[in-house]
Length: 250
Image (cartoon, rainbow, N blue to C red):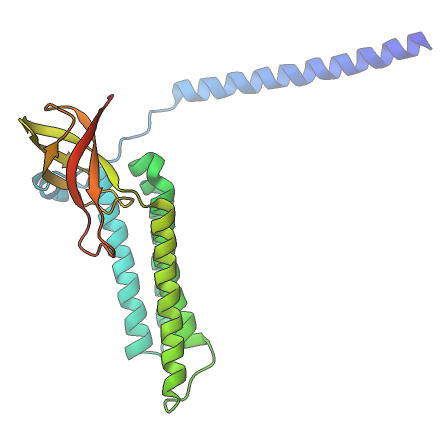
């Protein structure tokens, strides 16, 4: 009995050693692949646009968000044209709108994540909401049961329902991701005032650019700082950067 048990144990030991050796070989192959692999290229703004972005003190994140905004704008425009001017051309418009939606999702996963890092979930949610809104309008006014033109009250109710849903989505986004501060770099400092450079920040609704602010933290040129932001109720024109609240470690 003991002899049989020892043979079973020995068999399991050999299987385990074999699995371990296979794992070591695979690990070695992975390490060799990493050593031989070229480092990923750093994303760059296309050369024809580099001068424009340098002039506006903007970089790769602003270039990515501009692409996303353009795609969403074209998606919204295509949706309106389809619903208002060519409601019977679904076979032509729907594939185009699907391609635009897919491209927006592709840019979100491939370029927004490395561009905005820890804040990526907010940008992903915002893009998803915008794409969803376009399709909500298409479903509500194209593919739901039609409303007779004389039933004005039903048309108004459906329109208000869609508008309420859209506003609710943006309200939920603001409650979940919104914040009353952002980050930036001090370019110049003089007494209790400073000029800071801020990148695009969807969570505080701040546009990229330079701002003259109150220097409450005694920050100097080159410091990375946290900034107080004043957010209006609807924020269609963006938030206002008010003051430096603290200096941050680089």
